[in-house]
Image 1: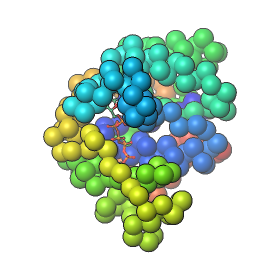
Image 2 (image 1 turned 30 degrees about the vertical axis):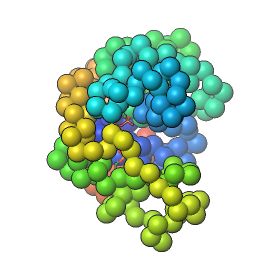
Image 3 (image 1 turned 120 degrees about the horizontal axis):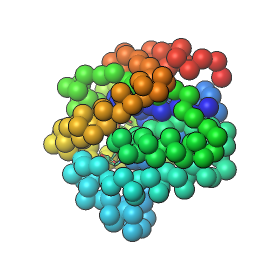
Length: 216
Ligand code: AP5
């Protein structure tokens, strides 16, 4: 199965991808996570992407398309995957369709997490992750059971993303509406688009997504 979760920054794409990964035995492919790993490793790609990401601008299509096409060739993707943060432009959507067609595959569902922009700033500026295992948390909406201790791995170190500052978040929201929202029409025409209420609480959003996707 191949799924695509869409929505503006903070809509819950990462949070829900991790839950669907476990529920359906799929692999989460987050272009944002891949780019942050490239920045951390100091690779050429990371050097080209860093300033753009810090401003909240999109990274050029050709870099992203090369990165994702290499990733979906890896063995773990054979069981199916969840696209989180890709495609983000019409050329990326067209490149994805061509990549999948080459493999005799197609997208099963493109699901939009429909949210209010204003609430996204609060979601993003309150977000943090475990520095060891990457589990995501929020200051208000998703706290660890024991304060300061990761539920999953017990680590006491956490990090916040460099692009999660309010000004940058507003630029990321603008980029979403100008460059990414137009591909909703593309997937509607393809007959694979659904939407769920991304303003519901996290468990309720997962339940809606499972309702769209169906049984594992
Ligand atoms: P990326 O990492 O993809 O960031 P994004 O799209 O801005 O999305 P986020 O990760 O911020 O939000 P999310 O929807 O995953 O929300 P989350 O689940 O964490 O991209 C970063 C940058 O990389 C881009 O700006 C660009 O520069 C570059 N890039 C990446 N892909 C690219 C591409 N394809 N082309 C070009 N450039 C690219 O949730 C947020 C918080 O809210 C969490 O704390 C969570 O606990 C909480 N939360 C989640 N759901 C709920 C809920 N229902 N109720 C209450 N709280 C909730």
